[in-house]
Image (cartoon, rainbow, N blue to C red; front, side, top):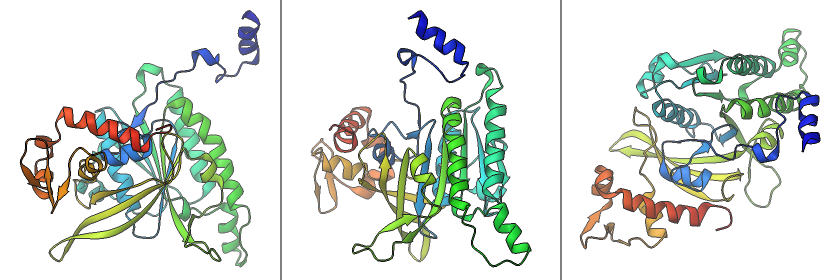
Length: 335
């Protein structure tokens, strides 16, 4: 045993530790939606991994930015000392946009980045500065990169200025390198990173298939990859939000190729926390949907709209515990 400890000491690697001493406690970032938590972690009380990379991919206008902002709000609401660093590649983030979604702008740092190299450098600088603090002084922190697909490279910009009409073949390698450097550091610092990315149609596939852009770097580095598709939700003629179908293309915490439907509002409400629980309970046999009405156990049949207008009345602690058992049975590995 002394020999093993000597190896750890002599190597001098700050990340070296005995396997018996590895902290097994999984940390989660509440997404703000119970069914989305279940999809990505196998529990309605879980969420995105608290120290790994999560990729959110979808076509243009699928609500990726609003989706990421909803998670940021949930993260900040979970702890009054929490902060978020938002790497904005589209110059889309404004103070009014954040305030309209109920986000405390005094706890969000917005960094505009143009190239992959710039994102890599600034992200590493943030993590290194964060880790130099005493552990007790570190505020909970999360990163968002919105979006990977809009990042350029220094070579691409240089070629454009030199009026060279050539494609930069080094971009995918730079993406791989950036995430290689960040993955372990984020894990050790307990800093989650959410990356939004575009998708494209795979040409020549017999079955219509979507694929993320930017090469394979993000695919390998991400702990969870979610594909989004949507349909707009209207109140009369006004579009008030999206009903989003979320599907796991990759997950280390739950079953892959599972999907749920979530509701995303465009205002300060963000993700609807309770949307989808009625369907989850019906899936597990807790109640039945008869012509749009649900029997919640007291013999009375209630319309879904009535339940969702006052969810805390119907989704009691006992009901939520049963729903979590159903979620684990449907989404967790080994179930």
